[in-house]
Length: 290
Image (spheres, rainbow, N blue to C red):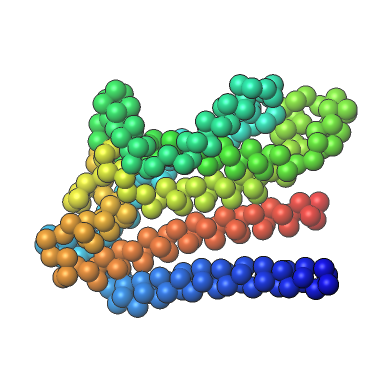
């Protein structure tokens, strides 16, 4: 009798899980279909490569794509090295005690801080205190702070999955601590580290609040070269979509353009997610062969 009850409970549990998965997939499919059906009609070469004109009722989103690219580059340049090296220190070098536990707790709490708070902090620190002004570099550094907890946590969890015997074997053969980490630990932790990092960057690419206070502009068609672009204001896809959807003086007229912008942003995020999956698969396949 008890066995039958357990089987019924197990079947009910699996049914609930299947229902939850089906609901999530159905919701995602509906969102994707809605964006595709309403946005694909405006996607063309001019929309992707032209500047907006006539109050953004015509033209394209090229400045927003370029601005998103440069902000993402600054975010990557700041958050990835700092996050990965911080994770290596916390997991491999730091003496595990109360202080390290408090640091980890602070990092995990920071990952749950609303993005608008990061935006206000970035405005106070980078724009006002460091006098970087409203610029790409201020926005990129702010997004870097936003993604830093994700990068550190993902990297540290990836390092923890590497067996302790890998470290002990290298140390027993006379390798230094850094040689052990570089040759025996990092190669096997890299897939998880990169996956978490890219997913965090994909989230940052779609954020509006942090860049709202640090440099994004409603209309900024100027396309500067490097390094001048770092100190100038910019347009970005998430903020452009926000304006077109909620603040534009002709919302009904520009709604197809808003759907097109949303579709481009969704494709950008999906590409980054698929890149994370592909990188993880390639590294796992490589080390399985080794």
